[in-house]
Length: 255
Image 1: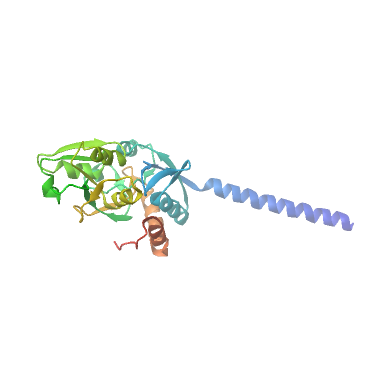
Image 2 (image 1 turned 135 degrees about the vertical axis):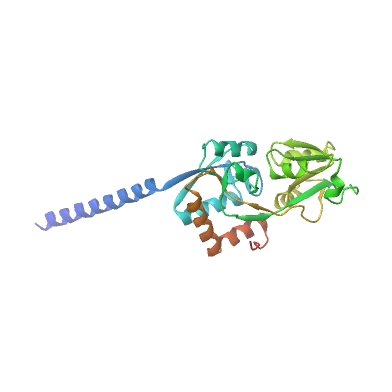
């Protein structure tokens, strides 16, 4: 009798564990999966390392997903193809160091801002003729294709603007003397200079614009509020500041 009772209790315990495991699997399967586009050619925000997508944006969206209760799935898309893909509804969102501009807001929706930045001018290290945006008049300027900096460069009088896929290509054009200057992001440009990608190039002091990165969505997306709630939690918990310090070795600004 004792054996039978022990056997029955064992069976009950196994059944309970099986039920708990089933519920855990079901819970994991029920978690909402959101697919985000990114262009992994923009260190330190998003880039490939050892076959994995890494960077500040990648860490941030993971943290936001955990805080808001969704699983982010990341897919690589050329930067100039991200907005058309969002407009077509091919992705739930995009996190790709994207400046939230008024022009872009006509085509897609944005989350609350998550990163404060600005545009800078880069020239050859021995160039003494270009010291600010007024000196770019009539010059050859390189920018990343589809970037907000392309819009900025287009406003420079009599300039010739060349666009290139990826963030390093404009720098290479400048190194080779094919353009007179590059307009790019302050943080990314600083990273390029420190990593050696911008060898023989200097970044002029001062910002020529004040910008904010935001996560992009198709117009009318029901996921914006969910992501915004996650961003708020990550910022308020201090995790945002920790990620900022990790990737940029500086204190996160208030915005």
